Length: 494
Image (tube, one colour):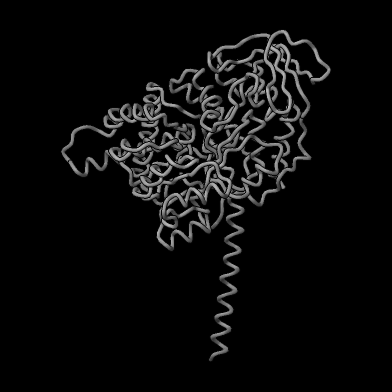
């Protein structure tokens, strides 16, 4: 009897260990960590002192160009910008005739997951800085060990509030940090900062009391609190506290929707539709954000893609740069069909099976309304001068790293934002937020630059007419940029 129980125990133990390792491998596959990765030796660039001749230099402060300028770069820094610099054998020269020089673009909301090759995608699209919004030790290692990459600001994994079982599960499966494990609150800041992260990222499941404590403690700590607005926070709570950065305009939309629902529950006879409520309160929120100096990241293109993912996913995918998307992310995993997968069988935004036509139509209308509310909130934020940062939520379906930032800029323009302000939101402002010496073309600033063949002031769609990129002083010519894309596509096929 004892030997039978022992054998059963050993069998169950072996099965549990096997399941644990299988699940870990499936999650690694889903997050793209099993895809072959590039090495720096495979990427070509010029690391000498360089001089860009006869180019139109964009001035972010005035929203205009200074023509026929010569820009000199040495040891990763802009050393001069003028029209009189003589030829010099000390600099490798680049002909900028007929071209436009802008500060390198910044994507203020990305998710690398396990996909190191995305670093090349960003460079290929003129994105010279990124803000990773759910960091892990791999990202910290890439920042230290990889030469060919954008500058990386890396936040902690999500800080949430969970009971014992959920805390264990989410820590093992997603790396989430449980706020209840840290008391007093400053211990959480110490934990995150000691590991090398640049800010505290908070999630939607953070307890409302913990949220207030974190924001209060952030005033005395050296790293900011950024991210979601927790689901337990309503409009009145939000107006009484200051958050350094809000990770999506969508977070404001959700705040207003749940605040409206709560008011209707408390007073069912209250007049006014949800749309009227959003219109009436969006300015109130925007004025508060402007007064506080809060940054808000856009991620509008992703939210606007929800309807396409629901009703025409196949055609949506056919128009994307899928060759460059990590195949692990595209295919997801059998462990969960509503995580980061892009294809129809695993896409998180697809409709539940078995819905009636009426239910589907109602869901579609709800998505259209949701997108409309984003536009209303965005226009209020713009009108009230809130500090907007262009961001994409890259690698959340169907936001392609690097490429989607240009679509984000185009959507911001269609929704009424001025082109100089759009450029500022993707250059100067995020550098200001990151406290980095970038986002401007002037001596002493980091040499993060993008050379364009066409003027984005004439058409914001020209932001992707890229003829060369300088990232931290390293120059990548058109052949090098094309080579990056070929390399990533080839690695994805292996």
